Structure formats: structure tokens, C-alpha cells
Image 1: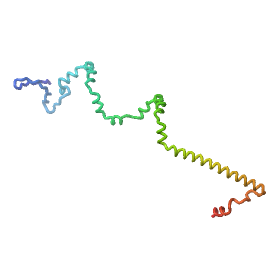
Image 2: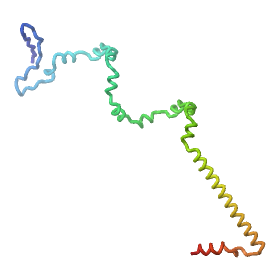
Image 3: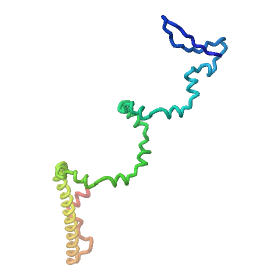
Image 4: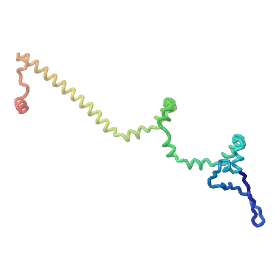
Length: 179
């Protein structure tokens, strides 16, 4: 099938030829892909794409692109959702990160006086000294009980009492405990 371009004139001026695919002769006739392709598509099909791409000045194309505008159009939230953070962190060398940290510089930035002012140091001292005093008092009481028992055993030996013959405590206390 042959394609023809019709030249038309309008008011003495010539118009460019317009190409239209020919209509199928019959409703049952179907156009194949070659018939549907226009002259430009056929010409591009004959040119090797690599040769065309080599002719393009990529730097000139990049210079014409406003990268800030491209970056502004990127949806960072959608991009971050697609990132597998566990996979990224698995590739991080933690020892190398720690080696880069200057602990002395971090310690120099700490304001100790402000830190002490923010903590209730007085309350901490009271709690710690109360704990120490309580333990010391418990130790003294335990020692007093042990000494009391030692004196009781010594008196029982001097008076030649049998062990366990002495009452377990004051009579009133023992009577109230039994009730």
C-alpha cells in the first residue's frame, strides 16, 4: 500500500504536506504495524540509537536541568518509606563510627555545675547517709542482742540454771502474744 501526501493551497500559500494513514479499503482489512508507522518512526528505526546518543552533549543537557527544582519535587517521605533501615544499618561499621567520636570533646561540653544543679544532690546525700546510718544502727542492734544473749548465758551458768529454764520474755508480753 502506498502513502501519498496531499499538497493543499490556502490563499496562495502552500501548506506542508500532511500524512495520514490510508483508510482500510474494507472494514475487514486490518492495518499492520508497518502501515501504521509514520515516516519519522521509520527513519528512527533505520538509525542506530548508539550513534545518536553519542552525538548528544550530556553536559549541556545537565547544565539546562535545574537540579534544585528536581530535588524539590522528590517526596522524601515516600523515599524514606522505601528504604530498608535494617539493611542499611547492617552495612555500618560501628567500630569505625566509635573511633571517629572524640569523647574528650563531648566531656568538655558537659557543664558539671548545671548538671549538679539539675539533680537534687542534697536529697541524694540524705538518702545515701540514711541508708548508711540505718545499716550501722542495725549492726549495733544485732551486736547488742548478741551481747545480751551472752550475758544471759553467763548469768545462767553462774547461777547454775538449766538451759531453757529462764522465761522467754516478760510475763505480760508473753501473755499478749498468746492471745
